[in-house]
Length: 112
Length: 113
Image (tube, rainbow over all chains, first blue to last red; front, side):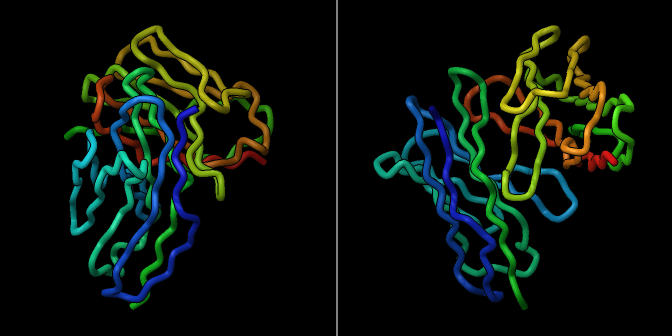
């Protein structure tokens, strides 16, 4: 079945470091892909999305490109800040059954 | 303001005492769902609803009930809570179309003793 795999955390980086959080997916059709972020004590909120192959989603300095050939949607940011510390979830949406399929989440810790 | 509202935010209860967690959205979304979040297990879907009077089981429905009598409300009912239902619960809603964003409530932290 459809699934999402993302790198295990926690990921610990120093401020201004480059960030990559890997996400790969398995899907029979053509899903939309999302990154959601969960700040401490809060619900999830959409960070960025891409709805078709080669689309690039971007927001708040984060980027991810929908790569159909490698079935990946890796999250990147050039220079992280302490305020980026959160849990990041990769997800795919299948129009065939209206379901969001979630990765396990990656906790990101940024040290000053 | 577009939002999903869950209540209560925090709840401590005893085993076997029925409880309801409410969820309401003001965006006219067709689709609503409940998740639980546990350390190391990510988000697991409990129940979902495609529209009014249409509900279906998610991945971990045992011990839970839901209803969808109105489009805006989707309460989660624990008829006889047990300690293994201690968790962080989220309600979410969205339109039923490709690429649409899901909106989440703030979460309900439930402790069953």
